[in-house]
Length: 128
Image (tube, rainbow, N blue to C red; front, side):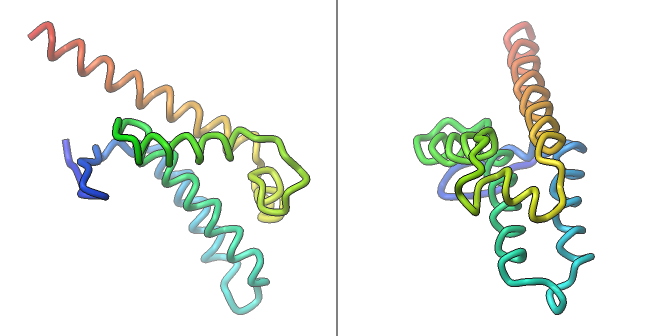
């Protein structure tokens, strides 16, 4: 398993094909829109969304306090249906013409798959 160093923590490289598609879709949206014709607010919204998706995926399987906090914050933000706050998940997705329910469903499916993969791997290690 590949790992990368982040905040003195070993980070498993668990980003599967679904997560790569999620991140690529957000990045491609940003690239497609370009920065010259896009409002700065939408560039910021795109960066906030990308950061949340990356934190959700990067910190899911780490168990130190810092990683747990970042994951929980990202997950809570993604699952919140707040429409009052301009930079809520729902409002950012709407502003970027991304279906928030589709993205949320994909991230939750990715989470379930990642956790299942790890638990299967741990069971296999114990039985070996």
